[in-house]
Length: 317
Image (cartoon, rainbow, N blue to C red; front, side):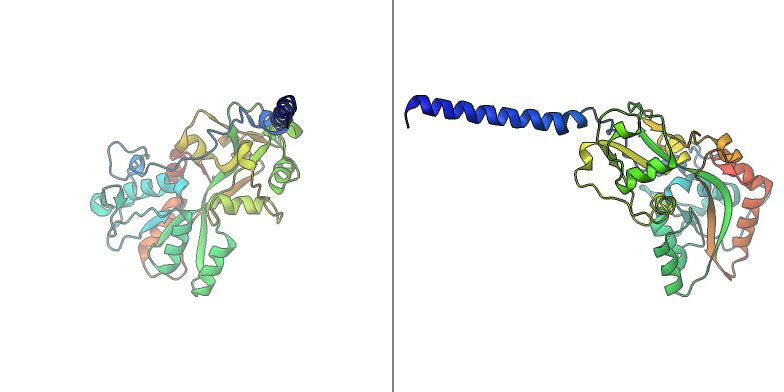
């Protein structure tokens, strides 16, 4: 091949790849850059901030009228509710009942921290006596049925199920229908809901976690759409209000209004915020330990409900 033809072929090849790059940039890269996603991943709780009987703990320190002795119920539960059941132990249990060494509660501790998935298994298996959780998944209910264990779910407070984005995302709120359309795959771009032209990356949580189970209930049977290249887009996530606002406390995260209402404590109480549910203490029906009922009754008393509110949640009354 003569030199001029080689040069022409090289130039045409370069033009082709430049055009391809420009097209890809216009269709994908420009829609994904500045994607507001770096703050959308919720970090785990720092357990050492919420220890009972620790002077630097962030839990409310109540002096309760009830003081338990004898067989202390082992408390466990969801990540978001660790401040609640740690504060319960601080209020009701002896000071030496919850040893914590090298970043973990010891096996003999009356407080454990296994999160929702581990706590629901522990209550069925007899490794915990009272767990503090959102409503269980169908799989968790089925596990209890298979083991022949009947669980009692006693509501002790209210909490909002929330959706969040990076604070740089200009979208301030969505309707319930829009959120379902996003997570079912019918809406794929923020421009469709009043935002910039950016792909939407809907985040999900671990199967069996309290927030994932709540999300499946919110979807009303609509399946969650998996997007293999969703990480290129701007994220939206979900969790519970106080976990985001009171525990994570990340200024880069913004809670969205849903159906025109923000998830404030006032809107939870009034019912203005549309996605509110109970959280529970869960125990085995017929458990002979009398202290279990004493803990449950105390949580429903004025003192117990004050503790729920002091922990950042909304009491039942």
